[in-house]
Amino acid sequence: MQEGDFVEIDYVGKIKDTDEIFDLTDEKLAKEKGIFNEKSDYKPVNIILGEKFVVKGLEEIIKQMSVGEEKTETIKPEDGFGNRDAKMIKTVSESELRKQKINPIPGMILDLGNVKARIQSVNSGRVRIDFNHPLAGRDLEYKVKINKKIDDNNEKAKAIVKFLTQEELEAKVEDKKVIVEEKKSTPEEAKKKIAELMKKYLKVEKVDFVQSF
Image 1 (cartoon, rainbow, N blue to C red):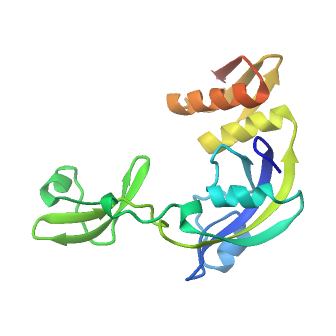
Image 2 (image 1 turned 135 degrees about the horizontal axis):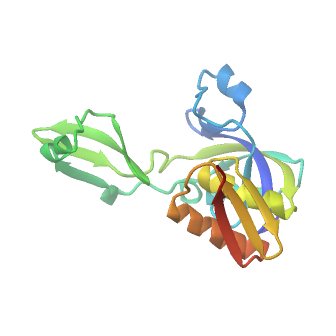
């Protein structure tokens, strides 16, 4: 495999020293391990190598593999979710959080849009918050299998849309244009990224998003 390839993969991601699974595509295994989440979509994932759809270390493993091959490898923090950075730990006023209707409790995870942070401590009106990724500084173990390489442009278009919207939408390539059939309005930032990737890899000039009623 090489950069620019579209591939379908199955994987199980674990924290190396605890054997704790943090991500996987296998619904049966999720149920066996007692970590099944009804909101999760347990299906193979389509990625574009070189576009950071997965962590750098996993991309590098996949590049050394062939269709049908399965590997289990360890990934160091610098090739995973990064090393922990003391500068990413901040102290804020408890009153400021309460103004945002947040009742800070140690261990609580704050969802701040594109960033998740964990409250480390609450003491004397001050709240210590860790903005490092929860898996920063951890060795990871990935078991990954390449199911297939995607060559069809319509499948590539659908793969791009699915990864960036988490929805199964129809996407058809017609001459130099792609038509994406929306079920609901897609956020503008997602539309821009979808169009950027489609123009780059499908060699189209235009991407239309349409809704049918």
